Image 1 (tube, rainbow, N blue to C red):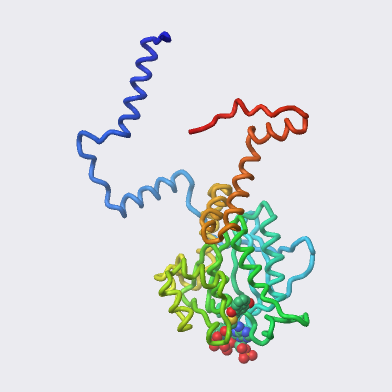
Image 2: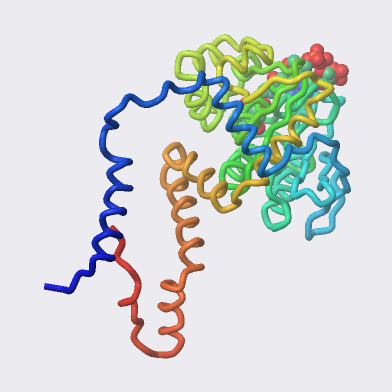
Length: 335
Ligand SMILES: CC(C)(COP(=O)(O)OP(=O)(O)OC[C@H]1O[C@@H](n2cnc3c(N)ncnc32)[C@H](O)[C@@H]1OP(=O)(O)O)[C@@H](O)C(=O)NCCC(=O)NCCSC(=O)c1cc(O)c2ccccc2c1O
């Protein structure tokens, strides 16, 4: 039997007592919990003491571009100075920010840039002006095979954009003033969060104008608001105000129009205080089931990405490069 000193026994005793304290039912009844409101408030207070207030000041936006160096005509792409926030604005206000294929191509370029820019942690998607976030596909350009602007064939390239937003490893926040309808409503739904102004209006119009989105536009909506409400929204094509949308779970918060950007910035800054890797993995985890194999692939890719940073993964690579057997013996096989 191994030698066990009195000190070892005392240390073990203290450890057992500490663990038991967490596991056993308490002999005396626990103190009554604080009313929920007060305990949340005091938790928030202590968070604030350590981290400080989240700033609600305006951002300084500067124009951004992507590596193609091409000008944008249908969108405005900006980054906030020193903040890690990118803002992408659909800029066709005279058409209620309806998108044409070129708009989508520009959006895809800007989102790609924001994804690859490691100084960017959160992306805001919005529409120019207060009347609309986006009114969907430009119906004047609709042809028998999609939407066509400068080309002789049609496209439904907004579907690529939807997938891009879902897979983008950074939170995308829809900042909605005015109408988010048709394909514009689907765009806000595929974003991670939606901050709505009190003048926001949400709805599908497809069946009214001879269209439908049977992809994310249906499945994600059903997830967000439930199958019955999703049927109501698609079959009746009614519009809903911001508060109804909030009640349905379509939006995270409704704020006065004049506070829309400041509130959105506050949410961005609060997210940016948190671990980017945790957020990245959580976004893919939250999408994984709904996105099927593609969702698992995204989540799995994140696991590999994190694993590559470990000594265990490096051992495999170094052994290969040095033409020797890898020695994984020192790495724990955790329970
Ligand atoms: C959004 C509105 C409710 C706003 O009404 P309001 O009264 O405020 O403004 P006006 O109606 O006067 O509009 C001002 C001006 O903008 C033009 N406009 C607005 N929206 C569009 C649009 N989507 N396309 C083209 N033009 C638009 C409007 O004509 C006016 O111009 P004037 O020259 O006449 O002054 C209201 O505008 C509205 O209901 N808009 C239409 C909404 C709509 O039906 N959108 C299309 C749904 S289908 C879709 O988006 C879609 C796109 C895809 O890429 C898909 C891909 C794959 C599957 C499905 C897809 C899909 O369904």
